[in-house]
Image 1 (cartoon, helix red, strand yellow):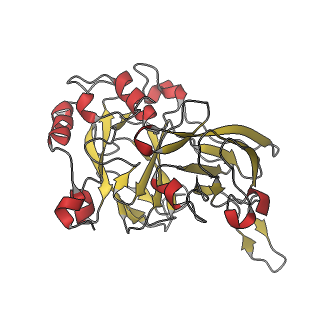
Image 2: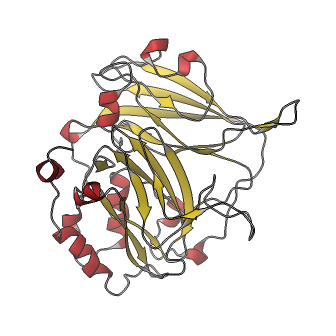
Image 3: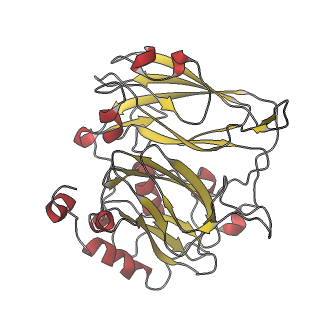
Length: 346
């Protein structure tokens, strides 16, 4: 099978926007199609929000496949599985029906966080909910909006940045499936939520980001002023913190302040531990301009060990900012990381 990794070292000087987008997509980063055209910028699309509509059933087929290097991934078409898997997205009140096709020789499943489901759609061996090799199985996930209880309290709805993952490979909890890449982002939005122009899933999985280490983590990018959505997910056995350079967000459901007096804490660093997930949107380069900005785990020996990615903010017209290519070259020239050699296998 073709290795879908986009090694940063293969990107030439004067890197093209199209080739970098292709590399990000191949590695599981999701870039909305509306913004993939050459020269697309903030003026190319007016702000779009989720509109209210009658609840509906969304049906999608997901294919689980083995990838190069002993990894596994989910994809929306045969032969297109990635690590992480595709972003699955619905609106509160909708139902998502997933037909999971297991095109591997391993037992596996798909298990969600944050939504509702019957035991038959749990994705756990305890509930006899999984796919044997070659098996096709349907999983149904439901969502609902917040509701007021009889005593005046409000019960939370399903809206949030969630995730899904295998729960059946090599045991009762899908440990091998998660380790080898069977995971992805699940977003439940509310009517009125602002939609992004670009989306990226960033998964801290033990000592890797999306099962890669610097400098092999593909560059993610946007043009100055574009709305960029990060979905951050934690997996594995290790404590992490997620830090994004030069950008901030509100520590609430969306990452946006609801108004000038919103008391939500504004942050640029947050714990990201196994099973956790959160998301936010930022305007690329807001207040700081275009350039090359790191995102990384702020546990120091994790960053030293290779948990470092790059967020390239291009000029508004899509061109490379001054000094950006040199910064990208320095990222690559820093060389591969070997955390087990440096830190005794921690």
